[in-house]
Length: 254
Image 1: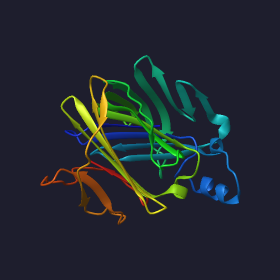
Image 2: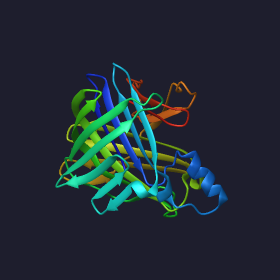
Image 3: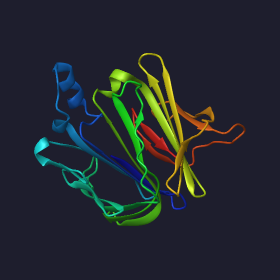
């Protein structure tokens, strides 16, 4: 489960990712090398707060005994996601790395429409992406640190029956919100040498359709020397307005 909320004017952003089987867990990777591993034994919560007064980064691994799932509800440790009518409610009480600062609060994300097409990313059904609410608005209310903001939001889900590294060498996605709609593009470089590209336009009336994908553009690499590709119309000027996460293996930017 993935969601983010941005307030570009104030330079604020919050991302929450909840994993059943954390794709970034060294323990999960090592367990898979020894044989079959149950993803419920390697759940995790990632919360990233970007703000001018100092960022907070949470990556908490959680054991099976502290996980609860239902059709409209997921709890992983001290973080809960649930649907309350048409609103996705997220509550969390986590500790940041590396100094253990409290990161506590809530997100209330309201989609303009619930979409949820299921897109096969790997070409063989092993990995599925579903953009649930690519066109949404949300309010963030944090107690620790004391931050409140609202802005455009996004929510999607990924799931699969095989480890990501078996099918993909790398991937990147981008979204743009414009008028009453949003466009999302997903690029994957597969281990078999093929490349997958998906471009979808979502409108507030609940319709969605494929769109032509614009040309590839390379932004400056990250502080960890990761390439930072994106896509933009021919002749457009593209630059990094805000780095939301710069990690050794993963980055996000506006």
